[in-house]
Image (spheres, rainbow, N blue to C red):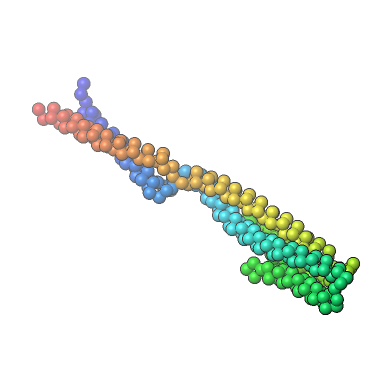
Length: 262
């Protein structure tokens, strides 16, 4: 039996078209914005977690920048120490020259003068080793690299000249201070090297942490372009089919009207 309710198909099809249109609109918004949450009620719990993680991510990004500066500062210190080590080698050469019994007073004076100049140059290398105006040797500049009060200290060791008298090197004698200078430079090398390794390791850990946070945030906020493109194509196909079905439902209603009029 044919019922007048058969015309209700028109309204059901129209409702389905409206719902599909809303889904297509959301897909277009997601693809155009790059975000998967475009409406106020979209995945609210995931969004809350994501923004908490995003705050952590941004903190870690700054930590990476700060740790990079520490690494650069300590690289500068290590370059200075390498030059100091070369100067120590020259001091040892001068000490050997001073042990030559054929050297006269003028020779010894020249040897001592060069030795004094070398120690002064070592001191100058320390004094001039500045990063953004801050001393690297003997300094205690603290650089934060994390949210939990994690910090790196920029310190490549204490000043060498504090324990060395440049005027009493005693080159060519048994009480030469060459060993003292060498020991001081070696201690700088160890201190700077340890702090450099710590800074590099911290930077590596922060970089890995940053990548992990970035992936987590993206999974909660960024749109899945492949999946959403598929949904958009599906919605567009359904929209075309819905339009065709709406025409048929409308024709069905017209058929019922024709029966009434006949």
